[in-house]
Image (cartoon, rainbow, N blue to C red):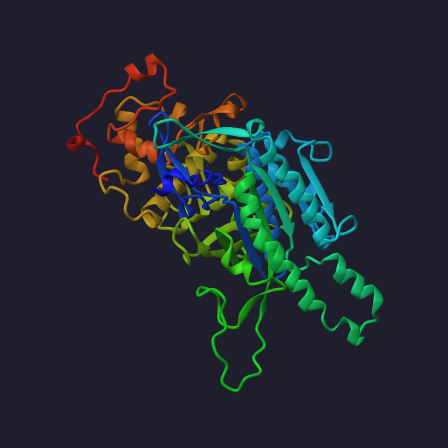
Length: 480
C-alpha cells in the first residue's frame, strides 16, 4: 500500500574509477543489452583519511578525474582549505594515464572549477556549491542521464547527470564566524577558547545536509581528513575507536561524527613506503638507464576501506603512487597481480608477459614505460587484476564462471574471439547520452567470464564477428 504514496529512491549509480577500487565496493548488475555492469567505485559521498604526506590528496584528485573520464560533460569543483594544492598540476599529471583526460587544459577547461581559502570561508563555499547544484532539481529534464542499468519494467534506469566536488581537507575547513573570532582575539586569548566547538558544530550541520544534497542532485562529494592520535589522560583508557577497523587510539582530526557514519566509503591510508628492490633501486624504473639508487619517487601506499556500504571492508589494498605524478593505476594493478603469486603472468621471474597479451614481453625494468605506451597492455592488466579481485572479493560468484587469466585467454581464443578486439575496449560504464563521446566499446571482466561459458556475446559485435564465434562444450574447456 505504501508504494501508492511514496516515491522510490532516485537511482544513483557508482562511477567506475578502476585502480583496484571498483570490485571491492560494488556488485555486478545486468544492463539493457544483457551485459554485466559493475555498480561500484565512486559513490555519492566518499571520505579519505591519512596522516600528512600519505597521498590522500592524490587519491582524491584521481577519483574526481575518473568521474570526468566517464562523464565528459560533468562539472567539478575543488575547494582547497589549506592553500597548498596546485590543482592544475595535479589533475594534469593524473590525466596522463587516460587518452581523453590527457587532452584537457585545466587552466581553460570550462567544466573544471577550483577555489580556495583566499576566496571563500568554508561555509561560504558550501552555500555557493549547494545553491548551484540544487539548480539541477529545478530543471531535472535538462540533467537526466540514461544509464545502462535495467529498471524493474525492463527499461533503462535514469539518473541525474553527475556533478563532482572535492573538499581538501575537511579537517582544516573553517567557517566565517571562526575566522572572525581569530581576528578579534590574540593568540592565547580566552575569547578564542570556543573556536573548536563552534567550528565542529558548523561542520556537523554541513555534514548532515550533504547526503540529501548529493542524493537529490547527482553530486559526488569527496572529502579528505587528517588522521591523528588520541591522547589518553585516563589511567585505564577505554577503546575510543569511532570505526571498528581503525587502529586503536587514532582519530580523524577536526571532523564531526558524521564523517564516520555518513559516507558510502571511508578510505584510510595506513602507511607508505618507497617501492625499492633489495638493491635500493626503484622496483619499476621509468628509465632504467637513469634510475638512481635510493630514488624514493615511487611509493607503495597501503589502505583499507573502513566503511564500505557496497562491499567488503577492512581488506588491505596497495596502490603504487609517485610523488610527481600521483596514483599509477596500471602499475598498481600490475603490482597487485605480481604480488599475488604472479596471478595472470606467464614466463619466468626475469622475463614474462601477461597471459591476456602474451606477445608483449615484460620485465621489471620495462613494465612501467610499456604500460604508459601501450593501451592494450593497460587493459590486459586491468582485466587480470579484476579477475583476481572477483576471486577474492565476490565470493558468491558462480564457481563455473571463475577461472584464471591463462584459461580465459585460451578458451576465448579457441572459441574464435580476437583478443586484439577484446582488449581494444573500456571497462567502465557510461550513460547513453555519452556513448558517442567514447571511442571504445564497453566490455566488463564479468562478461569475459560469461563469454567463456557461452552465456554472452558482446552486444556491439558485428554480424561477421558473431558468425566467427564457435561455442564449445563446457566439459571440453580448459580446466580453470
